[in-house]
Amino acid sequence: MKLIATTLASVFFSALAGAEEGKSRPDPQPSPDVLEITPQLYRYTTDLLFGEVWKRPDLPPRDRSLITLAALLASGQTAQMTGHIKLGLDNGVKPVEITGLITHLAFYSGWPNAMSAVGVAKQVFAERGLDPEQITPPPSEPLTLNEESEAKRRAAVEGSVGVTAPELARYTNDVLFGDLWRRTDLTPRDRSLITVAALIAQNQSAQLTFHLNRAMDNGLTREQAAEVVTHLAFYVGWPKAMSAVPVLKDVFASRSAG
Image 1 (cartoon, helix red, strand yellow):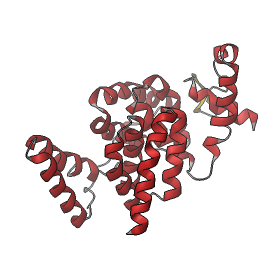
Image 2 (tube, helix red, strand yellow):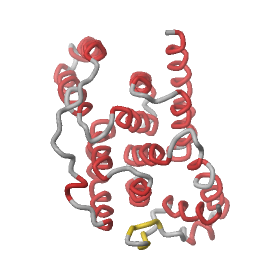
Image 3 (tube, helix red, strand yellow):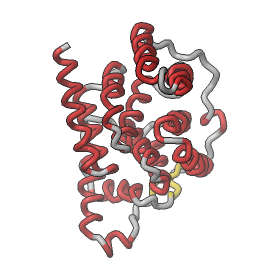
């Protein structure tokens, strides 16, 4: 147990990868500075964060990697993304899903954060020896979204945004939801999952209600939503996680009442 926790802890400190059976793995040795300067932080990291939180059954490791990467990108913490992209690949996140995550979050966290993440992903993919075919999604027909829900969402955007910022409304309807959300490099649930994580990381509670409802429509359960907030408390800080809790409470109540 301690060996596994220590191995995973190195991801937190963006340690270099070592070769194991031809596949890159996180270095099992965390930074000695952490143990020397902040021994209690070292113990929290190895025993609590990676030894307990990452092992909780409410979210599979793949989902935890997705929301962690989303939170790091949204927070501009690209220095921490190297290890977590490696861990994500080991947890079953496909390279094309990582590039899809970066592209998606350019719209929700800004182009600079996404562009900064591109170089990190490129380096990890090169170290893993991935082929271009594994990184670029194959041509496919766009997903079909629920027509009734999309009509209501489009009308809401036009009503609340269109009069004041008509081009923003057009980009929202035609590009963000009309194109990006219909791409097949991520499932609708994964797309919702990383959007919710990014909004929590940026403390965007006003936008969280709509996207949490959308995530649950796309298959996220109440237990999983609660675990997303719990997990992210360690990556974005307790205040942001606590600020998201009332939104979860209201969404859960409204869906139960409906």
